[in-house]
Image 1 (cartoon, helix red, strand yellow):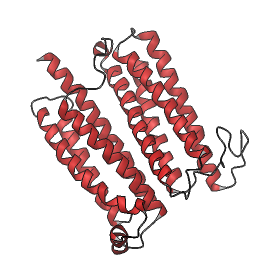
Image 2 (tube, helix red, strand yellow):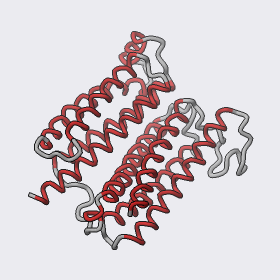
Image 3 (cartoon, one colour):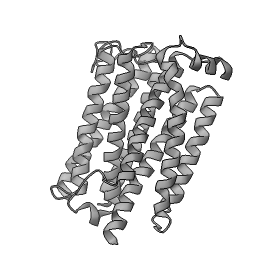
Image 4 (cartoon, helix red, strand yellow):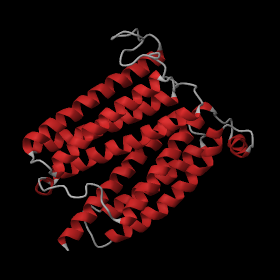
Amino acid sequence: MSAFKNFNLFSLSYTLLVIIWGAYVRASGSGAGCGAHWPLCNGVVLPNTETTKTLVEFAHRTSSGLNLVLVVIGYLWARKISPKGSWIRTSAFYSVVAIFMEAILGAGLVLLKLVEFDQSVARAISISLHLVNTLFLLTTLTTLTWYSFHQADGMKKAKKWIYRDRFFLLCSGVFILLGVSGAITALGDTLFPATSLLSGMQQDLAHDSHFLVKLRVFHPIIAISWILLVFMWSKRFEKIETAGIRTLLILAITTQFILGVLNWVLMAPNWMQLIHLLVADLVFITFWISAHIDRAHLNET
């Protein structure tokens, strides 16, 4: 079990890196680096990587393939050490479903040519679906890792895999909207970069702006709403001292808010977009763990 929990922690950490690299593929306009071919790159197994865009996209596909292998190994390992229907095995199974969905959605982006400079509604919808499934993948791997470190509970039968607390569900729903709006905003920043803060605000308010630009204004509104909701959610942990979860939540959302402001002030450079995304994923992981802590506390009391 010691090796199993370390493996899952590594798998979750590696998945975060793959997600960030995928965002860099979009930010650098390298989505068409392998042409409209999948799973082959430019029609071959090992492409010529002298072109930067091809190198970036091929590296992402390779790292994603390894990610899939890690998730499948985690599932097979979970089957050997945990009973059917347990938290560990159920989470591992869902992680396999999520990683294969990631592959299908990624393939769809490439085969339908919804990459690089495409500005269609179809691309906005596809990246939104990709974002939602990525969050699903993070929930499965986070849950698997959490119960790998809490083995006694992890071997118990998984009941209501998604926490049914109404306020938690509200916070989760708002975060999904926040993630979708963030993905669309990032795409708009990439395709329609502003030359200054003033020009960016003028783009947002202009009646003839592209819909990707007009939608950017919703992201900070949803972000502030979610921060307030999570602050309220964190208050229930005032008397629960489990790894300082309330402190972690407040620190995480505060850091993310500051990064969001900096991202706007600096006009969303690629490196800041990637940091912003990484911290957003860490915030979501912390939030998801807090649900398991709250569930365990209620069971105890």
